[in-house]
Length: 361
Image (cartoon, rainbow, N blue to C red; front, top):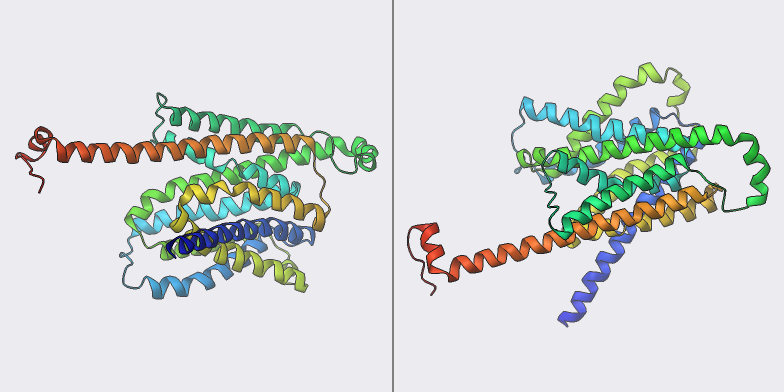
């Protein structure tokens, strides 16, 4: 009976993490479709963050009413800066990059986020390198390999893999323009990855001061919305762009707001809580495959050899980093266990630590 329950819980976790990756895959496709329809790259995130804010704010208010720490001016400044990094720069660079790239390659480059996050955390000394241990070398190697993969995607497009003959003549005519747009899109998506990784790293010390997670993310969305609204008058002066012209546009806005910032956020918290961050991260390639399939079927996107090669290299780097993190966690747990065992079983150690001998009952 207990075994059946255990399998059932694992099945639920597997379904949830796969659903999470499919939700994120949908964001790439829906966002690209919205850009193809001419939706403004400023108006789109404004509406997205309004919907996310309206969705999360009531839950944050009622569920964490008794647990929220008091707000201070210092915390508000930190929320503002985190929003600048995690919402404004993150979403802004992503939409700019997606405008020039297919969703498949935008998603592929984002697989480098764990490696970039590790590099940032190591630079800020929030993560230990431990180059004398295998897991330390694996994390460093994975970071380097991921950066190499992202570089390959950026600077080498390669020949198309689908309908090669049909694209051969057209590719020869517009190759220079395509390469320029490809490179520009990759640079923007790398900016998106840097902003995303920066947000992940910099939120850690803030959450220690303000551990109410729902309220924390609600403030981030609020300040992100304010920042986009401050930018909008200088970037988008055509009032017609603020109107929703079709049901498809309305669906895309609702999807990224409700699913992208609401359901996905809740699923991610649940998956990390039940399976740990490593389990959730391991399934990232599922998102890339799903995006590639949907982009080909729905948007008619083309696949290029350079993107496939670079994506594979990034995935290799991703698994090096994830393996290193997993081994580091195992070693840390074992060392903690050994330390506690030594402490309780060795009277001399106990006497040094406590000033008196501890007797085991």
